[in-house]
Length: 467
Ligand SMILES: Cc1cc2nc3c(=O)[nH]c(=O)nc-3n(C[C@H](O)[C@H](O)[C@H](O)COP(=O)(O)OP(=O)(O)OC[C@H]3O[C@@H](n4cnc5c(N)ncnc54)[C@H](O)[C@@H]3O)c2cc1C
Image (cartoon, rainbow, N blue to C red; front, side, top):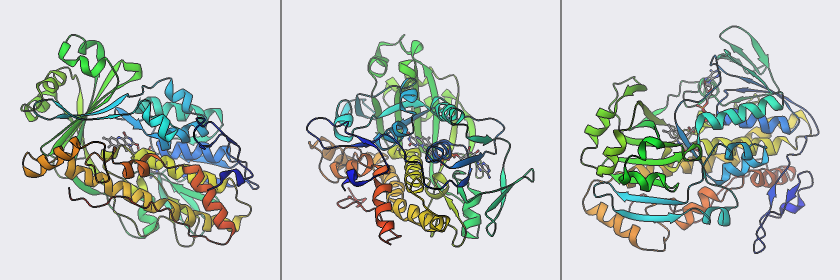
């Protein structure tokens, strides 16, 4: 598309001299100002609050928790969302608390031999014009909270929404306070209540059969062991793919902290979603794996395990007659195996922001919400499906399929269908080459021509889950 035709958004040509890449630097102020209620102050809800405020709207965020924060450990920010963070003025603050990985490495689960390697620095910035970032969730969330404070966004705590009146576009909290908005945006996460209200029936998340152990380790403690040097001397993303499980290890906080995520079969009791665990449980479960991992696990002081659930594609994200939409995990929760769930939630926020930065009259609200869904649904569904496909690829037991997978990994350069989806040339372009604000511009231009259901579709996406 020729984004230079977009009159109300400033672009800068930050491109390398050999590329025609342009990027947004400023969000336009909309011709009219709307009152927007966002339910949920997670990474998605806060990003939407910032973007929509920058577009000139009055935003109120209702959060059920008594205090703001994020539980969990590290999170990976791929280029589509690092570029959004830049546009909303949060990138430098995130980078000041983060670390950038150089390479993506996959090790044999048993011997620890390196079986595949992919460059990230300088490749990702050169190719996709955005950073690939590792950051602690709490640091990431705090940056967004501080940006909301700077912009005077109202973020109201202890505000659990448990009722919605679609006729008046009003939500009510469990403390019986009501808020009416021109638009209600449900960013209330995987267990979203707004999802059930919009659909008209309870829609529970699906069990994926896996869980995630998460732990943080002080890198100073790791320095006692030479065999762990490969983890702390240079920031990388380190993967071990093995029978029914995979393990991801990367640095955080400028290299002071090491983030460990272990994805393995769900052994929680039915109905239990999170539980404390121990390094003893991990060393027993993974006793046959790369001995360096066992050494690493011995340094864990505290760990918990979380049941991993996801969504199926919903019939709709938008209420049929009122101005209410669900976004982020509320509409497309995914296994974290492509590290793109939060990134998708930010992409939703950017597309909604971009479209609403042009809104000229209130009768455009409902079609713009439908257009947001139309632009975003195919892509987010592919990310959910692609992540589930990774579960099959990463967790193969030793045998014929695993040997085929590993021989394909060794067949370089990666081709379409490459088992490491992050390195598959087509899938990678789909995953990391997305420009959310450009999508909104494309959508708005079509909207003005009377096309209210523009779709995003990426050709050549390899979807065959067979190896
Ligand atoms: C182990 C693991 C690793 C992951 N790693 C990555 C990664 O590396 N990269 C990546 O991009 N993604 C990753 N993800 C996915 C990512 O964490 C989620 O996709 C993202 O946090 C979703 O953001 P959200 O704002 O949509 O929802 P949430 O973060 O769930 O926020 C929802 C908010 O709504 C509030 N809320 C809920 N109900 C109500 C209500 N009724 N009223 C008011 N408030 C309410 C909640 O308290 C919460 O604050 C990972 C996920 C897991 C489990």
